[in-house]
Image (cartoon, rainbow, N blue to C red; front, top):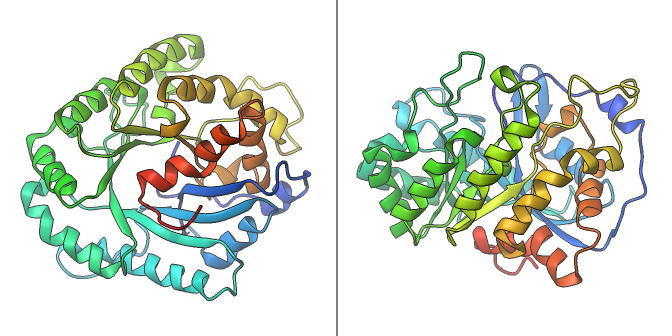
Length: 341
């Protein structure tokens, strides 16, 4: 559902074997969630990202999402994530040269800071702001945890969002005018609602439609998961300071009976994602909903061209104004991106 270590490199030749006509090629898009990294022999930096950005969609700007990339090798543990912020600034400078296209790639970013430091997080946040050259917009907390050992926990323990130390750190984030991205599992959506209630003036961005768990103990129980998830999404959406990102969903489940030798096209992808994303849009409204690529993680399953075509298929019936919000406006407000659209 989101970036983690050890991702296998996607088969670019397999994905490129399917080329589609780009739908609504003039529609301005801000991609609010992507990564750049060198990981397990797989390189995805500005040149590779630029090739995807050039696939035909009008991507005007992007938001870099923290992914433990290029951390400093030495120094105090709590400062090592500054290496990622410095790295993003350099990638953004490469993009700004114009040598990699017209997209304002890595125009802004959100990083990783240990929020269990509580109020002591402020000096670190100031260092990230300086290191980013003005691009740092907030922090992501990865609190995904489930008691079943078959689930890949990204947090070391349950209830991280409700930790009093995290609450103290979040107060600092809010006071500094920064935002908080949250990656969690659908079983934790009530924790997100509690966090939003405790900090009603904080901009919170829920990642990946709330990451419904469809494997492990929930394999074969998709309908049950959907109903549980839907209730949690409705509760989260009642908090007006919460945005939601639409993306990072599975495409082909183990039961898929089609031709697996061909990569999925946008019709297949939109059919797999539609119910989940339309449910989010109905709950949050277009003003607080934004499509995300989650590349290169999503690249294991479909191309960048297909990904955005799928989103456009899902919103084919939306008005011009509604599309402007879903594809750019909501992201621009959540991350305070001036002059992009």
